Image (cartoon, rainbow, N blue to C red; front, side):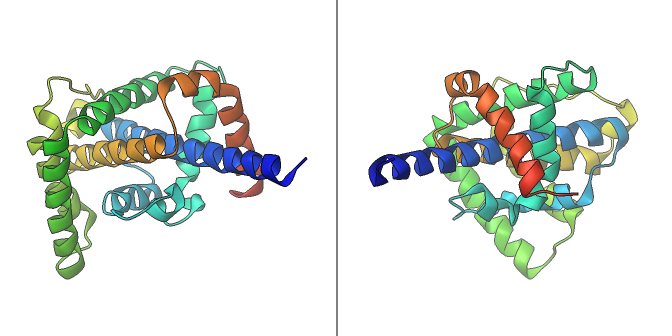
Length: 221
């Protein structure tokens, strides 16, 4: 293989990896939303990394946004399971949330005014986060308010299903909105890596293989 062809193949491999990790980030947020909606609980490390990614304004790779690939284990496993072809009932809500997230990402991507407002308010919240509090509930309440003033204005809403008791809990509702915003943020990383719906269809098997490779070689538990 010539140097040029080898370089092109390397670029494609890097791109596929980033697309896979970005999709895993979307799935991770959706899985956490589903867990919180049903039980009020979610995996702490995954929640923290996912919420922190909202404030990774300058990140150009998924690893930069999430700190490490280990912080995406829940999402990589979830993406592998979604692409496995095994249709388990508990995954239906996760898939529905993912599709809704990609739809909202597309709306926001084409809405420069809302995107600018969202970024400005998140940057303000990031300063408060550094100076005042790193408490998940406090941060989630702030980001939730931003979500309601921006994303919730669109005529499309993601309907969250779960336990009525858990969904009526104000802290749970705030964490869910914050996680949805993190998922939309991951949608931008997916798009930045060349991802699109038609590519997801065409590259489904390659992405599935990539998830298994990541779990076997980089996320060993």
